Image 1 (cartoon, rainbow, N blue to C red):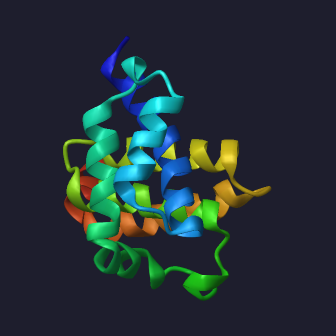
Image 2 (cartoon, rainbow, N blue to C red; image 1 turned 120 degrees about the vertical axis):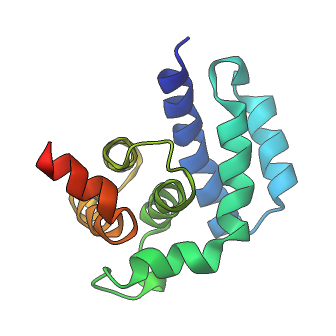
Length: 146
């Protein structure tokens, strides 16, 4: 299986795992073990899954601050699925510069279409676009010139 497909599967599971962590407040090691038990992890980028599952909570203040300025409501008013998607996508925009910003945004939008409330993908797209412009301005500018 290709690396992009394995990363895509990791992100799908991450959206669910981060939702579980946010809503249930469970222990990350237990959540990770549960996902390894309940899913075929042979087709998943487990390094990415592990990094983001532990990296998002570890860097939660910086991650939330990176996108909060672009919200039209309080953080607590976001539905937990959208919050999980914004957090994992923002983590990648901040810490995984090896992943092009357009890929991060596209993956976040696709996750919102799959798991989020109706039309949440439009909202998430707008927020992630603004985070990318703010945090990856050189990459975004270079892409616009190309």
